[in-house]
Length: 230
Ligand code: C5P
Image (cartoon, rainbow, N blue to C red; front, side, top):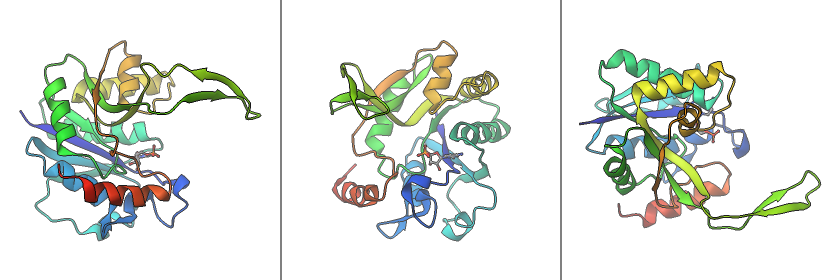
């Protein structure tokens, strides 16, 4: 059974201080988002991708993606969760089914097929779904406004949440709608599911699935792409 992918790509990337949103910066001769999309559509179990874009995005049309790529576009929203919601509504109009959906940041170009495979293997029979992540490797401090250290947080059981985040189309759409109605600020899909009282799983991924956020991340991603062989 095939799954769908949703790619929120409507962010402006203010932390990057670049002339364009980070998903359109060039990495190894092609825009970051093209790497991300290529990794998704070349996976044999992904049927197609819905991409959420900002209104009048001038960069998307000039990507000139191959016309046979199974990609649909829709309008993004103010926050990442709004962009994902819009893409899910679009997908509901495309299919009567309730497929698994992999929500993946446009700004994560190093996603490996082997990590997608781990998710599909570990989650396809799960009642809820789950996300890809990595255990924290650094010591974590809680810091006060005056930069004094308040506490060292016990790292046991703490993970970084990344993407893809894999949930069923209809359940995820409903969870995001409920969270929005209740004014809950969700920064990932799993938090919306948790808000519904559901228990998503964590799937261990590779640490090279970084989100391009700061200028130095591009150089790191270039190195990772070069080193990867799956
Ligand atoms: O800004 P952040 O790093 O959290 O963005 C993660 C992903 O969500 C990026 O791919 C960005 O383009 C997307 N996004 C979006 N709509 C927004 C904000 C961010 O699609 N309003």
